[in-house]
Image (cartoon, rainbow, N blue to C red):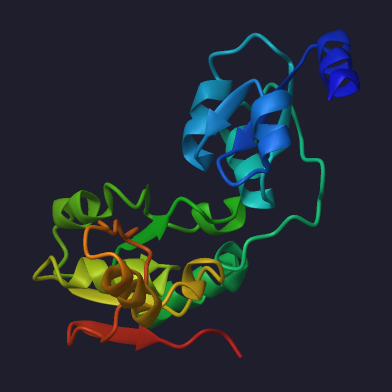
Length: 211
């Protein structure tokens, strides 16, 4: 850790660490910690010319998009995200051909290639407001199927989605959470909008992923 901290000062670098990083990286070498989008935003406020992104590939891309004049490095070029990798820019172009005129709302946790083809990006906290702001009564909400399914329960608009999932989020099951509640009824459970649903709302019209 000492060697890393010394080297980053010598090179004029700043280290961004996602919340999912291990404690030694998060607490001992990171200069800025947080979620993926906030890290990229915070990077615009530092003087360092070199940004080291301790996260997955799309996070480094987002940091580069918001800091085009800076050098953005990622320690592991193979660090991927199952959700981000479930869709490509070519897939989005095909969706737009299949549903002409339907606006595409894309979750920010996607590649720059996908963002370039979308109409507007959203976060998990503002996705509903973004969708409600659109005049269209039908919206493509991609790529997280569960996020779109949960949004569909809160809007009168028809939500079209993509079968993209985060493999980490899928590890949590309703049965497991109910077991925790049974063991300790005082437990309060907070669910991310990307969490699975036990049933699909009727508003969903699933779009199959590419072959």
